Length: 125
Image 1 (cartoon, rainbow, N blue to C red):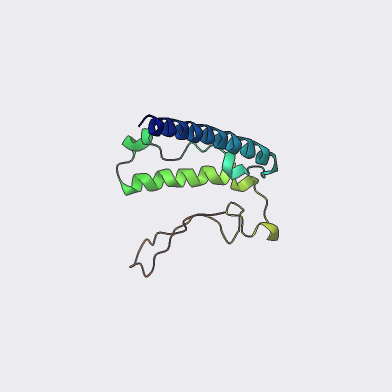
Image 2: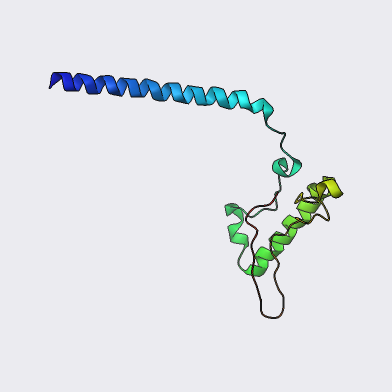
């Protein structure tokens, strides 16, 4: 019995040290890879204060309220991001490049008539 407990104690110790060594190795590998990562683009770093947040939930009482907030967000996005992103053939698939084939918004609302199809873009460039 005593040898079984001793064996379990040693196994737990080995697993603990192994876990710590693995975690340290992961941190070292992460830090070694960091310099080779590309720089973040403007659309990753720009702060947009017109976004919906939990603090603004009281302001949104209807779908029209939400659409007004969304229109303000897209206007802010145009000013702070789209206006500063390069355009042209090299940026045809850059979501925030004006005139891009991948340009936002990711959906369209039909104002009149019945919808014939629905699509959603899960992620953009």
